[in-house]
Length: 326
Image 1 (cartoon, rainbow, N blue to C red):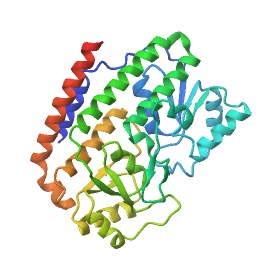
Image 2: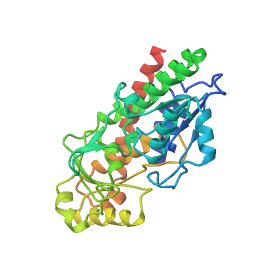
Image 3: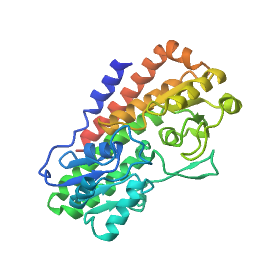
Image 4: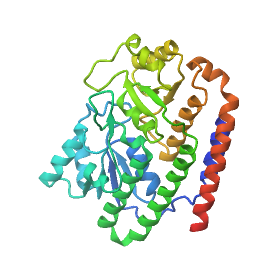
């Protein structure tokens, strides 16, 4: 598994990586690390600072005085859309004039294709949690950031355009490879709302959640078993509370459905690396939908090797096409 993941990453490296340019004096502040990973991979020449530390609940975090000062000096501020308390405070600081750089919110992203998925398990409302896990949203966030950077630093406009295009092509190469293998009409029970964005772009519908919303109590495992038995897989986050992890594992065991572990929040690394890792885990589980989580881990090696080898071939073709266009 690790060897083939490395092959995929080396293949993707054929798409020219973003060259470092003279933008060291440009500071972009991201509210959370995954958003920061999008910005840093897309625009490696800029300085990226992250507000909310890893391991902290972003729904509870409040800005420090030092961070307010940092925000006041930033050229661009990139949010998850605007629903977090920190992001609401940033909007207030912008109105007060403390923040003078360009702060990006959901309205800035929508024009480039950003979308909220619907919480089918919770009254069908917009899901603002985990939006970055959808690669199309990541591209939209990067494009809005590009436009803001050009507005703040027009001297480097051509560099920002070039860097964004390379990032977009890199993400789309991954998307095209995996979507070609995604099954039709697959469904999933997810652990929490953010998990939806890791599967929705593949055409996998989240039909239930163990914990429907931040303020809503978790649903009992036994209550979810009938729904899980009709679904294709169970999805949970590796960085979620231990009690919810155990509930996900128990649900997979009782329903006989494969269990998928993804990462929702990460502290470092390229966005595309995490996109590959999460999606490979999902596709591995879907290749043996009738096995339990325990058997899926033990018996699926051969299928996974074949699957990832095929993905490597598809990505290689796409990457070479990108190179020829440059």
